[in-house]
Length: 426
Picture 1 (spheres, one colour):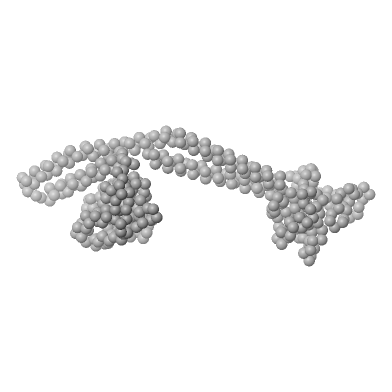
Picture 2 (cartoon, rainbow, N blue to C red):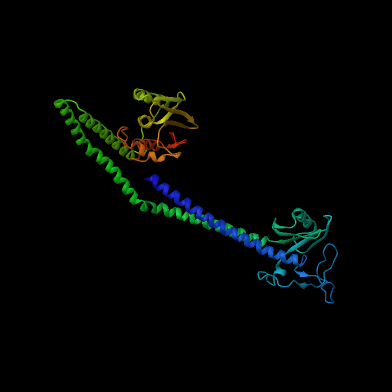
């Protein structure tokens, strides 16, 4: 039940994280685009004004303002006429709040004019360095350091416009950090709430799980007595009237039900004894070989071959009895559902710090891909729902419980739709 609760919290947190990530990325992307658009509107005005928020008149007027700083090329601008109809997002204060500089290239790619009179953080030399980085991309817009630039081609000449975007970038950065911080705080709050209320949410599932375990235990105990009586009555009838196909069929079904009851009991004990393993260090290789020896007579009688590839002297720390039972279940399952006169392949290898065991057998009725549903309790594929195999759909479920008790993984899959491969990693 702890595993279900942990998985529930993990899935819920991953889902919330994914949703919040999409929201944060989308909002900040839109903010970034909005910021770039606003800055581009300003550079566009400067482009229209030929590097200024004002258009230079053809002739200086008498009231020209000689207090303006001259550009590097020595020209002293006179009074200018404002560019008509600026965008609504550009206020009348924008020309006085914007810090910018421009660099001009002639047809030969030589800088012939540099204007840094509207910014104090950049001198003419620095302006040329910035311009040299963006000149080859003209015409273009983008960010360079803390400046938003626009390169404009006018015939063979290029005008490079740079505006200081430090304030906008800082605002965007603060917004990004704030949104991430709020999302992290929200995730942490949701995690705490899930830890507190997940037990309450999963209580119906836990009760259902307990009832299932109780049913398996009770059913096992209740069925033992009538099965014992039926088996005894069958023996008495055999002594009185002799053997017959009807009595043989009854005895076979009694044996089948008895094995199923044993599996019920085993499954219930597995659920109750999770984590209570009697661990010891033993030879994994030797246990596997001894288990295979038990099934050689069965395989020979059914004209099937057991084939093993394994590492010698491979040791493992775990519950030896449960590992033996795991091998028995997997090999028995392979023998029951493999095709006649087929080969059952097994491989035992060292996989880093883990031990890997793979068993593969040809069988019918499979589709390509994962077959983990075969590990579910009481599940059997349609092709195996017959009494001749003696399967109950519990064996592989017990195998999965053993593997999970040892903190390992087990997967079933069919690579070609013609054979089943079960891989255990412990």
